[in-house]
Image (cartoon, rainbow over all chains, first blue to last red):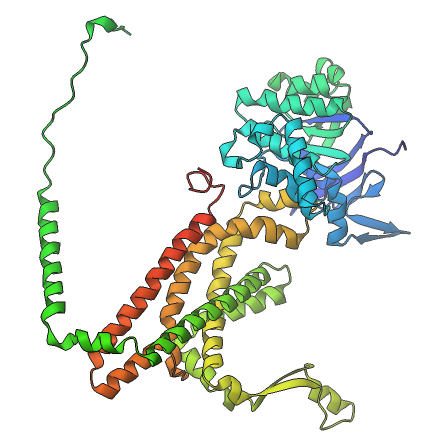
Length: 255
Length: 305
């Protein structure tokens, strides 16, 4: 295996109009690493996650995934924007799970999961359906394979969403507050699936408020505030002995 | 709080209350019933209806041809209208201001001009051009600049009278005007879809076109289909307007022609009502089933149970 980091961000900045959401963010995620990102709302953690698969375009700095610039190509000193099809190809290898699930409501669970492998990767219907059922079994939902999203609980929907992302066999998974929209008693089933995924060696960036998950599953915990990384380190360290005053004040509110 | 000992409660008996009276409802029912009876009585006793004459004349071969023409016009105009409508709707959402502006201008023009005016206008397009030809834009001007004053680069052409002659002119008038309305309907459908759907599709590596075709449009259909059904019904009625192009083998023109020829105008107008009623009723049934098909996956809809 090569030792290029899976994700590398160098002084990444992003503005929405006049509001600077990311202010020179530096970050590195190694292969097979689980990075948990915490921070107050508006700190730019979701925006950063969306930059990693180019749902948002960065304004300055450099952002690499697996050694490739995200959304751009560099030739000498010049930077070229990637074509839409090239961006789509980059996204194919990056799975993303959203806070509000974003399942396709007009498709059954199986159809949700098989859509991209079938239409994007070009697998046959039979093969993609077989794989979809496998992925649903992996997240414990084999018995809900033919249900529409409205017929599933929030936790089940989010597990289908994870299966849908996994079906593309990504090298990196992004989780954008995956349990924040769930009823408390449904959080555990989603975290369990994510934990198993981490044990299987998936590289993950998880924006979360679940400190227990961060402590137990995360390799690194990053505290972001005001568009930059304030503090990072092993989760137990950061949680038990936060160095920075802003980290201390945030942790005292959520713990 | 006190707790009632359960054993002390006898089985409660069913409530036998005196129901509220609704005198107003009874009066309204009576009035409507009387009005209905008067209407039916008029239909049966007024000699001007000429029911027998009407029945004998509303199924003659020219009328049936007219029915076929009207249905064909409806189907073709709606197919072209929906197809172009999707194109214009997507153009309206384009980042290019020229593309979006052109789509806006198209919608503006065709929604502003009444269909009856369009029908007559398209019937007279022959005044504008003697032939319609397909070729390279500005060919005569460019070749003239290069020193070929009379040359052109046309690939094929059609005599304007072929297009202006009735059916095609009428079809174009209806279809192009329909496209403007459909563009608005489709656009409303597309913008009603949660942007999270597009993001999820993009995150999976789906292209913009694939996202539109597989994710956004199928969901937008739920918003698009009901008004499209109404548009189809309206279109069926508006096919009567192509009589002004003029298209002569169309239903209303044929019924009116019989009426004028036999001096029995009124029965034939009633026949027209009956024909259009019958055809739109069929369309309404079709619309019901199509709507049910496209509400799959929506809470409370039949498709998802």
